[in-house]
Image 1 (cartoon, rainbow, N blue to C red):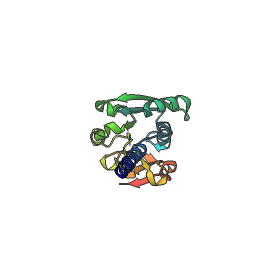
Image 2: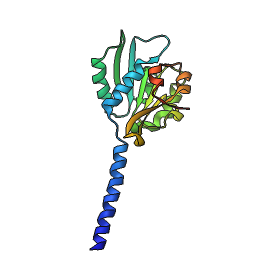
Image 3: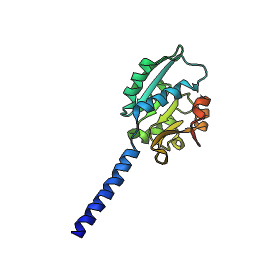
Image 4: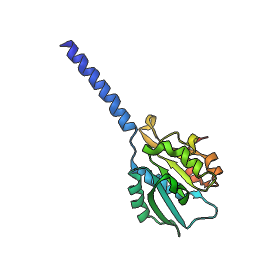
Length: 174
Protein backbone atom coordinates (compact mmCIF):
# COMPACT_ATOMS: atom_id res chain seq x y z
CA UNK A 1 0.00 0.00 0.00
CA UNK A 2 2.89 2.39 0.77
CA UNK A 3 4.36 1.85 -2.72
CA UNK A 4 1.01 2.60 -4.33
CA UNK A 5 0.82 5.93 -2.52
CA UNK A 6 4.42 6.73 -3.44
CA UNK A 7 3.70 5.93 -7.12
CA UNK A 8 0.59 8.11 -6.98
CA UNK A 9 2.58 11.04 -5.53
CA UNK A 10 5.27 10.65 -8.19
CA UNK A 11 2.67 10.57 -10.98
CA UNK A 12 0.98 13.70 -9.61
CA UNK A 13 4.35 15.47 -9.36
CA UNK A 14 5.24 14.62 -12.94
CA UNK A 15 1.80 15.68 -14.15
CA UNK A 16 2.20 18.98 -12.31
CA UNK A 17 5.55 19.64 -13.97
CA UNK A 18 4.15 18.95 -17.44
CA UNK A 19 1.03 21.04 -16.88
CA UNK A 20 3.18 23.95 -15.65
CA UNK A 21 5.37 23.72 -18.75
CA UNK A 22 2.35 23.57 -21.04
CA UNK A 23 0.84 26.59 -19.34
CA UNK A 24 4.07 28.54 -19.39
CA UNK A 25 4.42 28.10 -23.14
CA UNK A 26 0.91 29.22 -24.08
CA UNK A 27 0.12 32.72 -25.24
CA UNK A 28 -3.03 34.76 -25.12
CA UNK A 29 -3.20 35.48 -28.85
CA UNK A 30 -5.84 38.15 -28.41
CA UNK A 31 -3.48 39.98 -26.05
CA UNK A 32 -0.57 39.43 -28.46
CA UNK A 33 -2.58 40.97 -31.29
CA UNK A 34 -2.95 44.14 -29.20
CA UNK A 35 0.81 44.18 -28.57
CA UNK A 36 1.46 43.74 -32.30
CA UNK A 37 -0.99 46.49 -33.19
CA UNK A 38 0.87 48.83 -30.83
CA UNK A 39 4.26 47.74 -32.18
CA UNK A 40 3.06 48.74 -35.64
CA UNK A 41 1.39 51.93 -34.45
CA UNK A 42 4.42 53.18 -32.51
CA UNK A 43 7.14 52.11 -34.95
CA UNK A 44 8.56 54.91 -37.06
CA UNK A 45 9.12 54.24 -40.74
CA UNK A 46 10.72 56.67 -43.14
CA UNK A 47 8.87 57.69 -45.18
CA UNK A 48 5.71 57.45 -43.09
CA UNK A 49 3.40 54.67 -44.35
CA UNK A 50 -0.28 54.97 -45.20
CA UNK A 51 -0.69 51.26 -46.06
CA UNK A 52 0.82 48.66 -43.80
CA UNK A 53 0.93 45.07 -44.95
CA UNK A 54 1.41 42.40 -42.32
CA UNK A 55 2.57 38.92 -43.28
CA UNK A 56 2.36 35.88 -41.02
CA UNK A 57 4.78 33.03 -41.64
CA UNK A 58 3.45 29.72 -40.34
CA UNK A 59 0.17 28.98 -38.62
CA UNK A 60 -0.75 31.15 -35.68
CA UNK A 61 -4.03 32.08 -34.02
CA UNK A 62 -2.66 35.63 -33.82
CA UNK A 63 -3.44 36.05 -37.54
CA UNK A 64 -7.22 35.89 -37.07
CA UNK A 65 -7.06 37.84 -33.80
CA UNK A 66 -5.05 40.59 -35.50
CA UNK A 67 -7.45 40.67 -38.46
CA UNK A 68 -10.36 41.16 -36.08
CA UNK A 69 -8.52 43.89 -34.21
CA UNK A 70 -7.36 45.73 -37.34
CA UNK A 71 -10.91 45.69 -38.73
CA UNK A 72 -12.03 47.59 -35.61
CA UNK A 73 -9.07 49.96 -35.22
CA UNK A 74 -8.09 52.85 -37.39
CA UNK A 75 -4.93 54.80 -36.78
CA UNK A 76 -5.14 58.09 -38.65
CA UNK A 77 -5.09 57.53 -42.39
CA UNK A 78 -3.37 54.15 -42.17
CA UNK A 79 -4.88 51.11 -43.86
CA UNK A 80 -3.89 47.64 -42.69
CA UNK A 81 -3.92 44.29 -44.43
CA UNK A 82 -2.85 40.95 -43.02
CA UNK A 83 -2.25 37.66 -44.78
CA UNK A 84 -0.35 34.44 -44.48
CA UNK A 85 2.86 34.46 -46.51
CA UNK A 86 5.67 32.11 -47.36
CA UNK A 87 9.38 32.87 -47.14
CA UNK A 88 9.64 34.07 -50.74
CA UNK A 89 7.01 36.78 -50.09
CA UNK A 90 8.92 38.30 -47.16
CA UNK A 91 10.06 41.36 -49.10
CA UNK A 92 6.48 42.28 -50.05
CA UNK A 93 5.26 43.27 -46.55
CA UNK A 94 6.06 45.86 -43.89
CA UNK A 95 5.70 43.61 -40.85
CA UNK A 96 6.46 39.90 -40.56
CA UNK A 97 5.12 37.80 -37.70
CA UNK A 98 6.88 34.46 -37.43
CA UNK A 99 4.84 31.81 -35.61
CA UNK A 100 6.42 29.69 -32.90
CA UNK A 101 6.24 26.64 -35.15
CA UNK A 102 8.21 28.48 -37.87
CA UNK A 103 10.80 30.09 -35.59
CA UNK A 104 13.57 28.19 -37.38
CA UNK A 105 12.99 30.62 -40.29
CA UNK A 106 13.87 33.82 -38.39
CA UNK A 107 17.48 33.82 -39.56
CA UNK A 108 16.43 33.16 -43.18
CA UNK A 109 13.84 35.95 -43.09
CA UNK A 110 16.44 38.31 -41.62
CA UNK A 111 18.94 37.48 -44.35
CA UNK A 112 16.36 37.69 -47.14
CA UNK A 113 15.08 41.09 -45.95
CA UNK A 114 18.40 42.48 -44.76
CA UNK A 115 18.45 46.30 -44.50
CA UNK A 116 14.82 46.61 -45.64
CA UNK A 117 12.40 48.54 -43.38
CA UNK A 118 10.51 45.43 -42.31
CA UNK A 119 9.60 44.89 -38.67
CA UNK A 120 10.21 41.22 -37.78
CA UNK A 121 8.25 39.89 -34.80
CA UNK A 122 8.74 36.37 -33.45
CA UNK A 123 6.29 34.50 -31.25
CA UNK A 124 9.20 32.55 -29.80
CA UNK A 125 11.44 34.07 -27.16
CA UNK A 126 15.13 34.88 -27.63
CA UNK A 127 14.89 35.30 -31.40
CA UNK A 128 16.40 38.80 -31.52
CA UNK A 129 19.87 37.24 -31.73
CA UNK A 130 18.62 35.47 -34.89
CA UNK A 131 17.49 38.75 -36.48
CA UNK A 132 14.02 39.47 -35.08
CA UNK A 133 13.30 43.01 -33.97
CA UNK A 134 10.85 41.84 -31.29
CA UNK A 135 10.36 38.46 -29.60
CA UNK A 136 7.50 37.55 -27.31
CA UNK A 137 8.26 35.87 -24.02
CA UNK A 138 6.31 34.73 -20.97
CA UNK A 139 7.67 35.72 -17.57
CA UNK A 140 7.03 32.72 -15.34
CA UNK A 141 8.26 34.65 -12.29
CA UNK A 142 5.66 37.38 -12.85
CA UNK A 143 2.42 35.38 -12.94
CA UNK A 144 3.10 34.18 -16.51
CA UNK A 145 2.85 37.70 -17.87
CA UNK A 146 3.42 38.23 -21.57
CA UNK A 147 6.45 40.43 -22.21
CA UNK A 148 8.60 41.22 -25.21
CA UNK A 149 12.27 41.46 -25.99
CA UNK A 150 13.39 44.29 -28.25
CA UNK A 151 16.57 44.62 -30.30
CA UNK A 152 17.19 48.29 -31.01
CA UNK A 153 20.21 47.23 -33.07
CA UNK A 154 18.09 45.10 -35.42
CA UNK A 155 15.50 47.88 -35.75
CA UNK A 156 18.21 50.44 -36.51
CA UNK A 157 19.78 48.19 -39.15
CA UNK A 158 16.36 48.10 -40.82
CA UNK A 159 15.82 51.85 -40.57
CA UNK A 160 12.89 51.51 -38.19
CA UNK A 161 12.55 53.90 -35.27
CA UNK A 162 10.95 52.76 -32.05
CA UNK A 163 8.57 55.00 -30.12
CA UNK A 164 8.84 55.43 -26.37
CA UNK A 165 5.56 53.57 -25.92
CA UNK A 166 7.30 50.40 -27.09
CA UNK A 167 10.70 51.14 -25.59
CA UNK A 168 9.43 51.85 -22.08
CA UNK A 169 8.04 48.34 -21.59
CA UNK A 170 10.61 46.31 -23.49
CA UNK A 171 13.24 43.90 -22.28
CA UNK A 172 16.20 45.22 -24.25
CA UNK A 173 18.47 42.70 -25.92
CA UNK A 174 21.23 42.73 -28.48
